[in-house]
Length: 285
Length: 266
Image 1 (cartoon, one colour):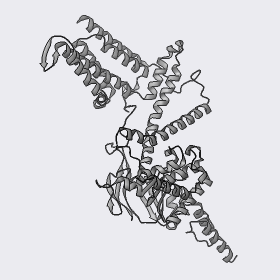
Image 2 (cartoon, each protein chain N blue to C red; image 1 turned 180 degrees about the vertical axis):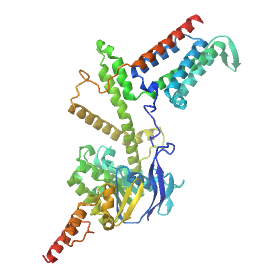
Image 3 (tube, rainbow over the protein chains, first blue to last red; image 1 turned 90 degrees about the vertical axis):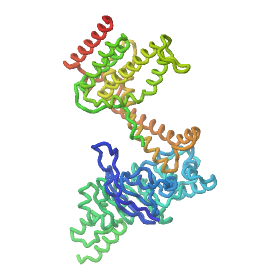
């Protein structure tokens, strides 16, 4: 159960001599159960790559294999693929349309051809997973707050029970509290279901604490693909492409330069706090 | 998905025609269209074709772009030709089963088709060489005299330019929402008419909401910048007639005179 991207390139308008490669020879493997952060600037090709993974966009060259089968093969059932690889777009609340929250979440499972009972069961489960209170189920989705709308939209994809969940900038446009809540909810979801999750973002702080692996994209190519602590060691290079490292990394590096023996590879705030305390307690001065 | 749809078919290049004042192009196009319907003789059509060829040459727009505009009206053109060909009474030329082609019919069909072609190419030169914003600017200024009759010229022009500005934005939005719903298993392509119409709901509802949201935002932004209608509003680049514009008017006038002369004399 894995997704493999094999030398995929994508060009917008191949006829136009001015058009550039949105994706340039991308290869990667997404094994089951991994929580991956995909980082890159606007225009780095991250969103385009994500749309390839569920067959919304067809690669100009190269292949994508889901569970060993080429998704662009003529006999491949795209609808089935889209139910297995769930894609939550940027600002997903813009896709809500039903009269109430619950029916909107039912839209996905119903499209899969499930009967009403099963669709409703899945919708309820998905809404539970995103932590939406039950009393909001009968409300119009347009009356909810920004964060709640986004939860409903994410539930709309979760209700299809995908094996892989791709979230394109799930925190865009939310306030710091909303960001944290959504990210914590996603982490919890991952911990409970061991679902493969791809979290696309342009903020290192968003992903540093949560993911097992980070893919850094720049100019349509994969620049780095590694575990977070090894990625953040290259924070000088990351700065050059305007990304940088999480704030924790900077603080730890500054402390180390001023003589405190802290571990600069740490990526989460909790570990950083522990490391700083330990360094203070053990240092001779 | 919707990338193939081109609207506001401006062709970016450098040419005299591009630099002309939009009012000249608007008036010129209108006069040219009128001239097409003035007289009906072969010399007149040749003259109109020559004038058109001259303008196309000056505009530096590849001819195939003009022809592209023709494709849209191909169907209309075909109907016109067929109706004129078979339904005009007169001297019979050919008889095919129950249908007859008359001399007058043939004459009408050919000339009507020519006229339509000239008309479409003539007006597409205008849209190909003028940005939509320039065009509305030209309309606003050119139609200013209508204000006297209480026609809200400025408001109409503003509405038009906003509408044009929003077309690409809404197209992009449609594309995005469509993809998002397809990702949720929506199917826009199969099924009968009723099923397809129903399938549009998940696309149209978010699209309308987004259009209203954008309209609201824009209204706020305009209000915040003290927009209060056209009264006393100045332009960053006011339209001023230059020498080339006067020359262009002269050329159009010359063409019209020739056309009338040819029509009257021959």
